[in-house]
Image 1: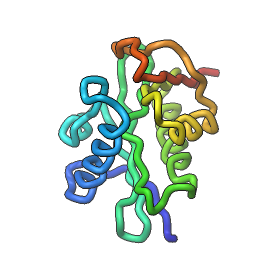
Image 2: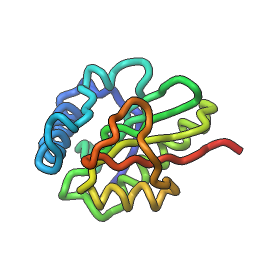
Image 3: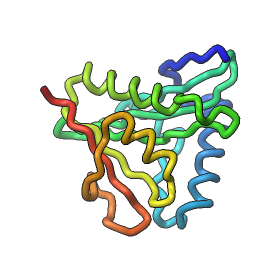
Length: 153
């Protein structure tokens, strides 16, 4: 495996396919009204930076940093294809998101994930995130689990 992780535009067919796969997985685990998807067009906004992991030339994972006010960054659209899971690719993407957030002076990373996404919880907890109450404007529902990581000194 020749793995690279780099900032890329989400407006490419391979990334659209990854995001479609992610959406399908999320909809298997969470009712649609409790899914908080960004479209690839929204991911292309200036407030969001998208990381794509590639095995050789093939896009196999993604994740994004969405910036909010007050020094808060949000981890969004994390996904690794089943063929590449268990190789700590998600951890590498989260580390890149965190490094970018720190370099920009953000003081806190937050995220919302599903209540049945146990593998995602492990990725975030291994990266030093801790569970917290609802973040940003997400509703406090049983389908959501929230995490945060303080980045300040």
